[in-house]
Image 1 (tube, rainbow, N blue to C red):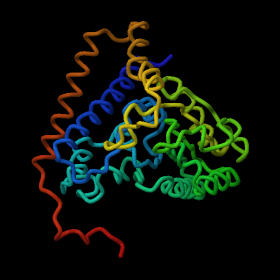
Image 2: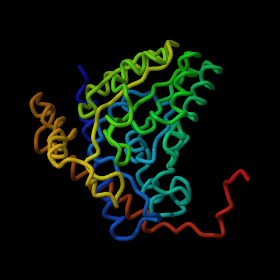
Image 3: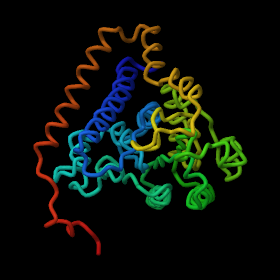
Length: 319
């Protein structure tokens, strides 16, 4: 049984991700983001939260274009996250990366990536380095089901299994690669069988159940740390909004959307906490107030920070 602090922190992290992304959409509509390209993970919070809670401080992760939740769940500085999205010098990439390119090497966060699947090779390279150095680190690679049809995933999965690299592949299957349904993208829908094809365990998990995600992630990460090689986790989740802000998702059935929204991971977990006597409504209200304060502080910090300038556009680049 998890201790109360762990259980409450899982809830706090999911709420922080949800409320932050709601604020990000608000800032986008106000024209305050440095770029109109913005992909939120509203509905998917349990996957980032559950997996990152299972990681050790020394571990690595790589992330996607829909990656705000990953860096928040990893303990990223919300001030620097919002500043980056607003194109400010105090942002994680000094205002040059924006929503899709967040990185914090000090946290082991090796970067989110605007190229679908582009970071999977980076994650596998990090795991190879850890294997060669025998440093005890495990790398987690988050990606969507759309990336599973990219060549880089197949090459990385084959290499990781062949060399028993300490990596966990986490597919956040939100069911749609932009507008393409998962059922139309691959002939084999079982993650267990997909993993088996590469020579690694494949685990299916309800991505709306944060405790279930945490448990499979703990097992996969420790398996990798013991030198037993990679695991493929298929977390079945759902993005409540469109692919990006300009996508009203007309390709999705409205009954399906309603059915999936009824499985909101935050509400499901809140109901569990109430049943188990871990939290009360008063606790939830206090937590929401704390989250609102943290977000307001981050936005204030970002808006008061100097914008990135053209004078420094060639700094921090290799060539």
